[in-house]
Image 1 (spheres, rainbow, N blue to C red):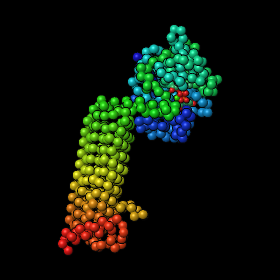
Image 2 (image 1 turned 135 degrees about the horizontal axis):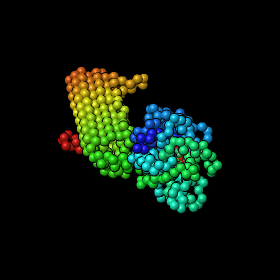
Image 3 (image 1 turned 90 degrees about the vertical axis):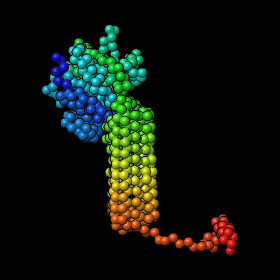
Image 4 (image 1 turned 135 degrees about the vertical axis):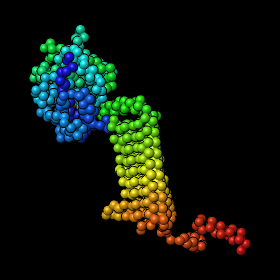
Length: 482
Ligand code: UD1
Ligand code: CA
């Protein structure tokens, strides 16, 4: 059986990516919450190869660091100053000197190919017994891609790059996806014969195809049925196309797993997020990073979650949250802002125009309106009145506010940390709480109200306010019969 042939995967990631016009190396630009090269590493790993080799050069340290982080144990090799995909593969083969199996070459800028497509390409290659089997696609606009040139009997003759193509060749609609399976030995032999006499002065991997054909070693192309997955990302237009295609695929996958996505076009789900069945995603919602959403939860509309944990049957409406935990049955929003380490307990509530940072809101506790809660621990079944502010910062350091169970506070309170409110305590409206409140106490800090009669008529004579006040006073005096 040929299927026991060893497999090595080579990922080309050394190019400059000039057309991105970016400080960030092209292969580190993300789609679906993961860098382009990360998608290709995942696809490679899914094939369970004996070796994976990534070739780097441009912004070497950044690319190598990302590869090491995403796929520890993968071999990273350096390309020298000779440019071109052929040279990159030569560098990879230097790290595979003892290897004599099949070499699958992938481009780090072709991120959407699925493992099944590549497994099919491998099967075709091994069944065909050729020296190379390349993946091709028919696209509406082949501009920029290498074209697959076939002879009169429709057999693959060679690949010609866009910049080297005659008008007739440029009119060909079958493109080279940039993905190939080679037998290692003939690849090594023919690469030695590839020069740089072409429009870009590069050592093209694609030239090996024509050389193998001339050497009568067998060349084949396998046409993929999913041309959208063949997209190569060279500029930011193609980057957004890749993001769109990937997102449509991700949304569809979760829909088939039982997630209701009302509007796929305005819903963005990173490949790293996890959703349970019976989650509902309303329009204009972003589920990003390592976010997990448990069964029955409703997210959106107009909501962004990054690296959050959302509990069963929770609701998050028109809100923004990062690194927050929302307990089962809790409600967040509309218009809440949950910052890192905000934790809303089971059945809790964070309401309208409320910001929470590094705080625990206990089970069944509510912060319903217009509040800032930072560095705070709130017990269970607490209700904070509208406009609660924890003053956690005294210009030098951050301090904690601790609020016990069953505490009810009046509207518009300021808690000047560090401060502790005991279980069951209450506070009056407008209180500024600077000292600890014992359990069960009522804390008042506002002076009794004083009314100074006739102040407006005396101090603001001739104003509209003084006129209507005078009229109201005389009406009142007449009614009182004085
Ligand atoms: C390449 C193919 C083209 C194919 C297209 C598919 C060649 C000569 N051309 O063109 O036929 O249609 O991909 O998307 O191969 N790279 C290196 N070292 C280099 C240059 C590039 O590692 O010296 C890497 C890049 O990082 C990238 C990949 O190889 O991941 C492709 O390079 P790129 O310059 O984008 O080639 P294309 O012009 O797109
Ligand atoms: Ca490319």
